[in-house]
Every structure is written in C-alpha cells, then in structure tokens.
Length: 286
Image 1 (cartoon, helix red, strand yellow):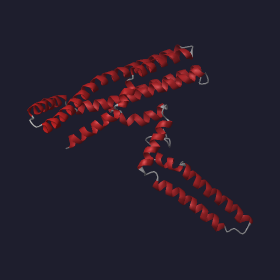
Image 2 (tube, one colour):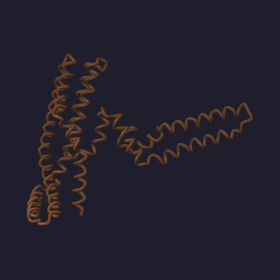
Image 3 (tube, helix red, strand yellow):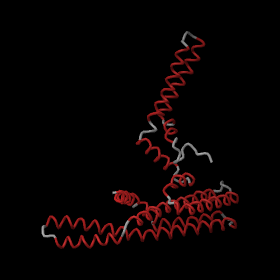
C-alpha cells in the first residue's frame, strides 16, 4: 500500500505541508508566472532571456528555503499534525494509522479484527444500498464513527494498563502509613503542614490508582459492546431491507457510548495520566 502524503506516519508530510503553505504557493506562483511572462516577452522584444532565467532560479530558491527551513520547525510540525487530525477526524483509515503506535501489541489483534468487521460491513451496506440514499450515506459515516470510538478506547486501555503496571499499590499504602505517622509525630506546625501536604499527595495517588482500576473495567466493557454490535451489524446488513433500520441500530450504540460518557471521560483524563506515566518512567530510571 502506498502511503499518502498527508499520512500521520509519513515523515514527508511536513515537506508536503510546507509546499502547500499559502505563502509558499503565492510566492512560487508569482515567480513562475513572472518567468513565463519574461520568457514570452524575450521572444518579441528586447527583454533579455537571462532575466527569465534569473526569475526561475529565484522561484526555485524560494521553494528550497521553505523545504529546508519550515519542515524542521517544531511549532510548524505540531500545527501540521493538529490540522491533519482535525481534517481527518472522521476518517477511519487515517485514525487507525495515527493511533496504531499508541495501542499495545497485546491489543493489535483486536485492532485488526475491528478493521475487518468495519470493512465487511461497509462493503455489504454499499453493495445493498449504495451511497446516494441519505440513510445509506449516513450509515457509512456512523459506522466509521463507531469504529474510531473503538480505536480510541483501545488507546485508553493501553494507557491504563501501562499506568497500573507501573504503580505498586502496596508500596503506596506503606508510604501512606508512614506519612500518617510522621504527621502525628510532628511537633512544629510548619513541619506538620508540609507532611500533611505530602500525605494528601499520596492519598491522591492511591485514589487515582483505584479509580483507574474501576475505569479500566468500564472501558473493557464498552469495547466488548462495540465488538458485539459490529458483528451484529454485519449479520443484519446481509438481511436488512431498510437502511433506516441499520441507521437506528448504529445510532443506538453510539448513543450508549455518549450517554455513559465513558470515552469523553477517559480522554479528558488522558493528559493527566500521561504526565503521571512520564514521572513514573523517570523514577524507574533513577
């Protein structure tokens, strides 16, 4: 499979973005139009052909500067990836490629399975109902939304598993016991307040650990729900005579995910958890 220029894993995507930047396109277009105009003028007047050559050289130099300077700029790279993510927010193939590296190897088989189910369901729905019917077209979009939600849930599963594997709850509880003893033993008020702050931090970490355990099971159940629904959709798509019925089935699962707020809730705490993982990783190396 040929990797497209705007692929999230294509290292050349920043060069393509630099070439397509409005300022570059405007400058290069003006330069080449000037080159063309001067070239034509040199055939019918006293304008030197060398002038057209210098203009063409200037246009190439303009493009070279953009290709050499902009793609390596960190801010430009972040902006490019953010724009691509927004542009292909509902594109399953793009999201699968973008999220693949954030899903653990233990879950890659499930990623492949959901992709196969999605592709099979799309094939059946497209063959039966086409893509011109409003409900049929909506079904394909909803099907991709459901599959993308599943990919995002796999990312959350990976992140939570990593966090739980790095944290030792027994060690945290021992630290908590020691911290409580130190608070009780403190005679100076300032020392007591400092130790109390440490105690609250440890309590917060233990609470986060147990909360993550509970959320992990909730996310696993949501994954099972999506898997079952995708299989049912494939079965129903083969016998369905009404695209509107299929649309209702897909919407029901999407609505269940929205109502439970599982996905939004997990992704909202993702950044905080990622920071905690970074801290734990550094601690392991020390």
